[in-house]
Image 1 (cartoon, helix red, strand yellow):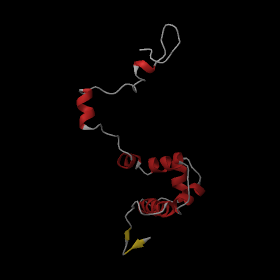
Image 2: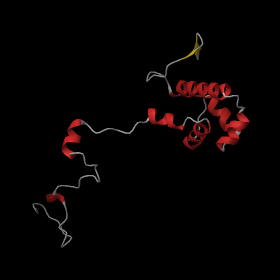
Image 3: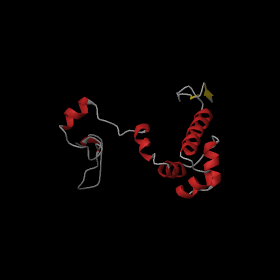
Image 4: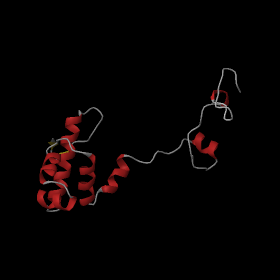
Length: 125
């Protein structure tokens, strides 16, 4: 939906269908601005013309097809803005003292099986 020549801003209040339709319109506009036919974009992306048309019309598509289309349009890096690498909180940074987390914490020692016998009972440290 375009209002006054501008694309609408995507927001959390929109339904999935409206978001898909807006993304499809944006991708179509980018394709046309680059003077690419659906056939040409489909060939460059390694997807079918029907897939390109379905995405542009707001239909559902598999994520690999969207990634291929974004790559063919030179826009794959835009996903970095959509799904940025999570940053640790300041407290987590202090706790780690700059070290990268390598694994999740295991259960406390009193909940682990005894490594030597393979047995566990209540109250075993």
